[in-house]
Length: 129
Image (cartoon, rainbow, N blue to C red; front, side, top):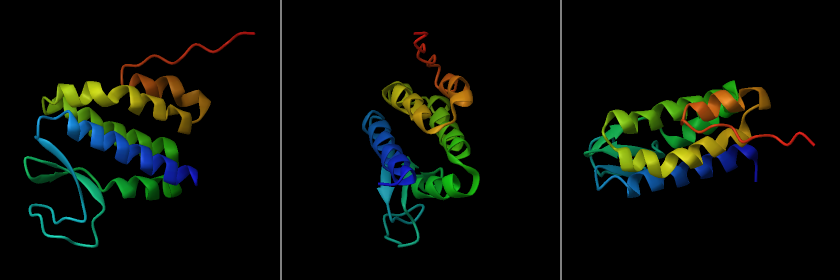
């Protein structure tokens, strides 16, 4: 499996967890119109908050990996995950922030601390052996 597909799969899993802990306010949908439940093949996986689209298709982050690199795509995803706090979805935020921080495995070593800080998770200490 390609690294890009691994990232997409992890983002979808994180999104499912966020939805699970949202008390029904947040849902992860696939191939739906923005404000309906009608299917459209142009849409991928995305969030709906109270029935209205929130954020990008998760598959678009894979395209961002190709165009601008993993760090950019994951920083963009971090922005949307941060919005969980702004919307008062604290249980969702707490349920996913560690998994989100662990996506640092896909960013360059020099950016790991900064990336993990987006989720208020310190970088693991490296062995000095």
